[in-house]
Image 1 (cartoon, rainbow, N blue to C red):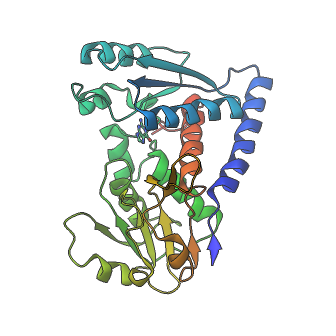
Image 2 (image 1 turned 90 degrees about the vertical axis):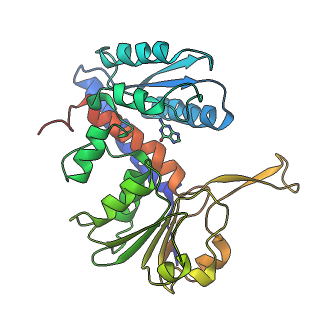
Image 3 (image 1 turned 90 degrees about the horizontal axis):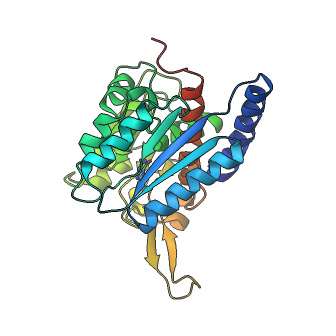
Length: 294
Ligand code: GUN
């Protein structure tokens, strides 16, 4: 069994990005600039955004964090989006989700200029990805593809089951694994909360990508011998034995599943670090105008 070490891999990519930024600066160009809008004080969102800002610093990017109160109006948020759309100093930006209930997330996503949508959530980027055109890929699926590539995980002709149909992870992941590509060409099953006999599907799968957010729901008896298991889940589970009172759990019961796998991602240190670094890669692409060339 080989561990797919997202922490190590992301550190290597970080060095590459840092090197590219130095090259840009030596050529007299400004570094890539990512902006993030954070509305309210949700603890998890704050942690994620702080990771993104910190990573910008580490790779040498500029970053701007726009913090807004959770009682701002939808119109005010749309004005901020519009301002960033036309700010030539900002290459790409994200609006951290979820947004407060009184703000329509879809409306906000649609207001982002697809050319600056480094999250890849706008329907134009989703559509371009679906058609195999150059697009900003959503960071988590993009990070997983890079991990498969770096570890030369065989995917051609394999049966891949993606568990979870979120717009951010499950759906785009299923598209990427089925595309005609060296790290795709899978036969894909997209399983979700209404799927019957999940275990039967999983036992036929060479690759399992779990993105549900239900701690340790995938157990060893559900996994085929030699399968590749990618765990996107990361949930805080109460644990009195820990100083901070909780531990982080993936969707996969790691210890017992690892014994059956050819490759597996740990939680933490697997998919998480790859997600943040992939957002940086998208921001560099935005700075270089590499996506909307055709
Ligand atoms: N909320 C959870 N994941 C993400 C992400 O990748 N981007 C944004 N904007 N919000 C999120």
